[in-house]
Amino acid sequence: MTEDKSKPNPVLNFFSLSDDYERRARFLPAVLTVLVALPVAMAFGIEMMQFVTLLTTGVGIGAVLAVGISHLASALGNRLQKKLWPDWPYDAPTNQWLKPDNAARSQQQKKQWYGTIKAVTGLDIAKLAKSDDGEEARRVINDAVSKVRSRLWKQDGPATDLVRLRNIDYGYARNLTGLRVIWIPAALLSCAGCWVAWWKLDGHILWAVLSTVLLCILPLVGVFVLPGYVRQKADYYAEAFFAAMERLNADENAA
Image 1 (cartoon, rainbow, N blue to C red):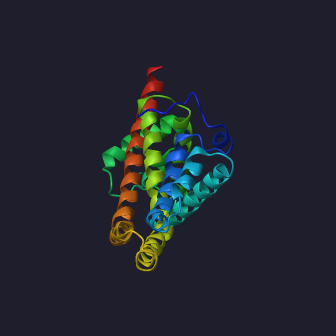
Image 2 (image 1 turned 90 degrees about the vertical axis):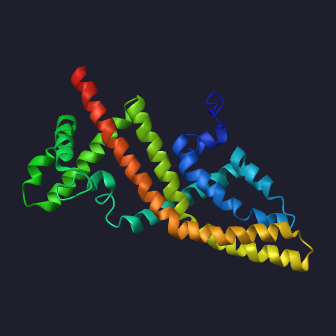
Image 3 (image 1 turned 45 degrees about the vertical axis):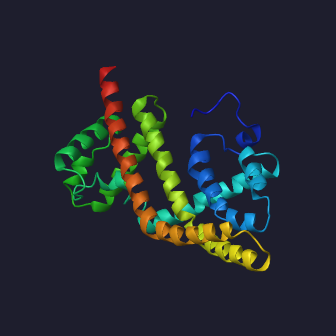
């Protein structure tokens, strides 16, 4: 389904929520977190979907709340990122794969990347790789990655489009996983509330059963599945990043 860019929401646009990254990597995980409480809201007869509609349409206070939960998703995502990669950005895949002693990619591949980076940025990682100054080498690698990334954001084409898509995918996975500190407790409270509603208020048992299923599944997914999913998406971004970098260099040499 394609997005109708001819009619952007003026309120969300004002609050910087009208680009793909903000909507899909930050806002969507936050909305999914809110939806975890849907069973207990339905069990107590609360019209929660009206609140979700308010958020997604971005009208009035809904726009303010949308910005708030989006930034919360980003903050918790960054918190998770520091746990998965404590020395970020120096231990991010894009940086790690360029380190001479890293075995994730072959030495021949690294030499090709070093040559491409020198051509694109002027930074000579290969020269530093032969020295004993490890701190300077990792700083130069990070500077090189930052420079290449800045160049890619200014380019258009299939390769850079894939980098942007992978960046959104990574942001979504990271932020959704970071929000588990909210949606796992929310699933527990929702389950308890649904059974109370069924027992005390003659609520429908469907919501109690649904909330119990979610409580059984969500913690397992949040603890054992999603962290690996985030790492996988980071690797996919790195692959797209280096492919786009090589394409950028090839295009400049052909020009």
